[in-house]
Image (cartoon, rainbow, N blue to C red):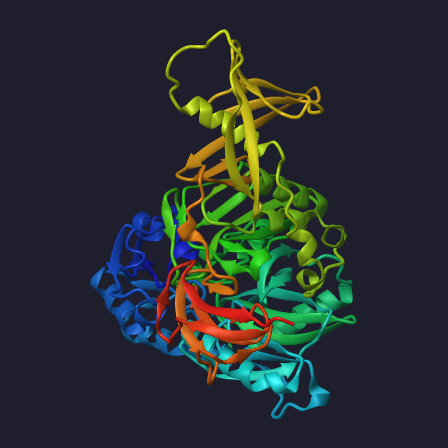
Length: 620
């Protein structure tokens, strides 16, 4: 029997595994980098061991340090979570060689399937050896790992070499393995996968299908189980292929076999020899705990001959600290508050006041809804996200709500190109026009006023806010009866109640409640974020036209070959690449002109808003 489990991971998945271990009476051990010293997973574990350093290569990718940590803390088993070393056969062997229990598949099974090129060969599929014009579009893909890292769609042959180089660099940073390959890119398909669970006694459970078609940068955003609208023969074929893949490598434990479904046909993509991020939707539908079953299988127990029956529908949304309207740029800073209404499952690796840093994936949480039908699950999840308090850096919360309510998704007609088609409409700003007034009234109640009310009309008070990229002014007055809105004569707005945290306005005869929270210069009115603007702008904050500012904190990893001050550049030309949160981000020229300033050099650490370069636009 396992008594103490070390989780060789961080964040949300470490916290999720710890939760099951506590339920089973198993002690828990966390490992943490210096950047994660105060992280939630390090706080909730029974014991925690420091991995010196901050980057994944220094810490969570150091299998030797993790094995030493397990032995030092008295652990007798290691759970890899997902990502990092979860599909590293060498790490699995090192754990077993140290006399520890490995809560995962046998190293030889990982080895056979962890490389996507070898997995395809095992299933009788060969990757492209040489890419020609006739092969386009193609997908450049990392042979190891997952999560959309090291993946690029190439539509022009002249872009292939650059995208191969970028994919190799990203894969090496994320997985410690820079091997990549190319394969045909199937457009308009659905990403469908089958969860499997196998024991060491010959039983393999196919635990239903999941649809993971809503993706950005080839990384999943919304997942659901079962995959809607699949014909029964196709579902049976997917089960048969998944079980065949598991038996081909004598698989033991939890794993996922992924497919692209297009034209009624299933195209094998890969087998992930680990737990998936989206495993909670399968747990909800089958009423099981996959982590608990992983532990039972690792202890040598046999599974029942068949899995329990599936019931209802489950949908999961990944809440990311990123700005979808700015090329999905990851965001950093303090997460002041994260609270989701009851009735849904929240898996997170953050607590209120935690810092979202630059070194790791920007996922904040997973929110999961389960209901008897797909429509009910959609409604429940969208409503919970809409009411959630997410105070801190910009997130994709609004995008998630709109995606769930989009007619194409609501009727299950989506495919992997959903965001390519609809991103502009899904990120169109739609702020609440009364949010600035509510913020101003709450601020007025939160500040002491000197003197009493005077029997003369008061001048309107004004507050300025930045909301959805635009400036807004709110006006109000102090009256005998309290605060009053100072709005246009055509507006019928009455202040019913106002305090520092709650404002109730009657607008056109309808009462509306606005919960208000303030954290420094940021104000949150319901789901709307506002930035308090100073009365007098700071002239030093002005930048020259054509300035390229760092969209997020990160590291300059590459500068375009031959780029130097005085060079002629074209609009849209890639100038440099930043690495942040395990992803590369391309910075391009905003206009055609001359590069007059270049402050970026490879290896330089930059903060958000740092000046990277200036392009002086050419006059026609």
